[in-house]
Image (cartoon, rainbow, N blue to C red; front, side, top):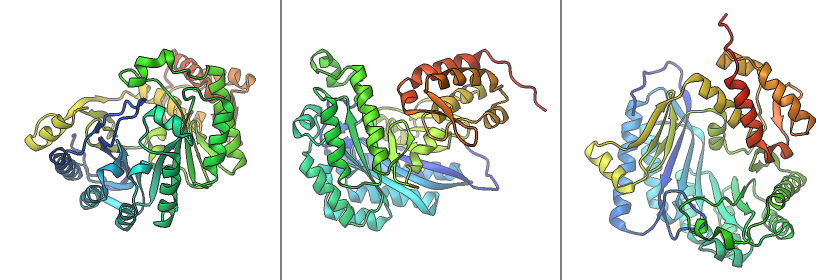
Length: 397
């Protein structure tokens, strides 16, 4: 990890901890995780993560941590004691602000009253609950280790434990699912009244069990998936949710602050195998191998899979790709001042998209995509990147 010169003013920093353990692997999951309860492996992981956090804290002064996110895998399968130990290590080695957003992902089958009360007492204040569907048969197809009844029970336990910021993950475009099925899922889940909802289209990733059976999964056609997406946007808007990113919706003021760091170019450090970081102008990813991660931390070996310094023009492209995922959008003056590139070629592309109702401008002049624009965002961003590649840098004044 690079040594960073101390700064006079502390910069906001996010911390991500990857917990690679789960009860079972879902059919669609390509995240680095393993279905195991091997105490030796788990203890080795815990020691390695805490040592890594200590090392990073010593080498990265001048930052204040305002978001911490435990993802996986299934952090709740790992258990409250381990999560508490890691959070304590973060607090000891980083300057964690008093009102930091501290999130853990949870699966309904691994939520207990004891776990929730312990984590609440330790300072966790946000839960991301993976429900995915309200159909038990669909959950079985997906390889999810829980029923919808368990999900509802877990949600009420989370509320009873005192959590006031709860996000629910849902998936659409599932095998055999139609628009009515999806609408019923939305209606049922929204009765729980969460603060945040994430709606993700099923993607068939290489190397997953679903990849080998794609032809027989009976997946909805693309136009049906598009209708499902627009139905989610409309339904959630009607229930008081604000869409602030392509797949994410929240009550007023309750965006995922940690995930917004990814979409707005904020700095973050990742711990655990396969975790990524964007820090001090460099992006690096840790090895996707738990044993290699443990031995690397223990023996002082190499734990990084890749590291690169991002050129400014590439950062400009990331600004376009990531900001246009969000309701913040992009701004001509901000773009030109930050990257010293002309915005006019981009505006030509956006004006064309405005005619198709794919893009619009806010009252402050920022360009944002519409819900229909989000559906073709890859094409729009590709055109913007081409226009950017052909542009001539502005002269520095």
